[in-house]
Length: 482
Image (cartoon, rainbow, N blue to C red):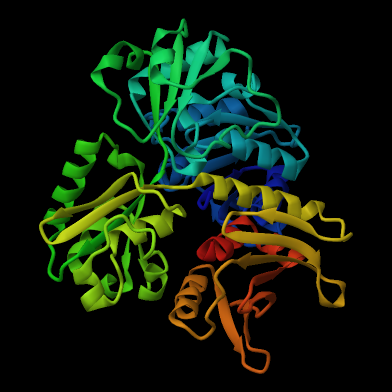
């Protein structure tokens, strides 16, 4: 969470609030002005009653942590409550930090997870009463949320959740998206059963169902959908080529007609990709902005690498751009696959192709990330990501390293490196050319700390420093080239 308010009104609360603010990035501390002398930091002091402060800040923060009695907090927040989809998370900590209590928006608002964090910081006992968390089962309303999944048939969430926590038989069908969505440290409860087809699920005796798919479900499953929650993973990569001056409305028409004809859900689109020559095309930019999709741009050098596997190469595109196509190779590159769900489809002034994202590679990246702390500095550990070989090994000066060796060598000093440099800047990193040894160093932009380097053969990352930088940095750097 980026916006957290911590509120305290006592001497002991001042110390606890100060400790929380130092440990929770993005938090703001609101302290009763009576206790200015109790803290070494400078929080937001207030002199108005706590109910007045709450009225001012309740809708400005994602979470509110009160070091105040539970009863007082309930009376204070009661006038401002709306629903679990809009209310902030509310956590209460007692004056001696014996307990951290998840009070409001436990799942959707993230109060349960934040309560666990607060309890660890203060050495308190977390108090969480949400049935699915207590029972260590599937939280129906937020399953896959950290993966970007969205839900449909939300009107069924309450009754499906009831079946889950009451340990009734619940069926699961999945044909798209990440498979590693079960994050708890215990096995999936026995009242869940996986099915290999919707037909089998519909015929089963399951009281409820969780359906994870990027496809439109047909009318023949109407009765099944009455007891189901539908999850839309971000599993589809869209490749687009377009003429100069294409209108947003033309792209919308092409998209919706194509997806409707092929039985796919627009809600499962992860992003749109094209050739970098179109990175300022107004209609395409407006199209992506309207839908909230990232526009990924590939160089012609990257797209031409797929020339031998495209089902529908274009002589016209080859003539003018020196590449065999845009929509098909762009979709394939983003999805990290050589298969298309929808081959090139032509519309007014644009083409579209769709590929389903290869999450096996993503899952393998996670496995490698989890293996980094386990490396014992004895010999090498090897992994295979299909087109990329990964090795954990001891580098120069006995420094543990992780190296990614793609089959295609990097062309240093090329457009690919320029694109990589621009991408790194979004991660607060920078690329520094080391001419005397013919490679590039990857450094943190704000302090210049070395994280690794790019040679013509591999990306080589400093093991301990990349772990310190975190998963998002590791994933960003490696996924760019895989």
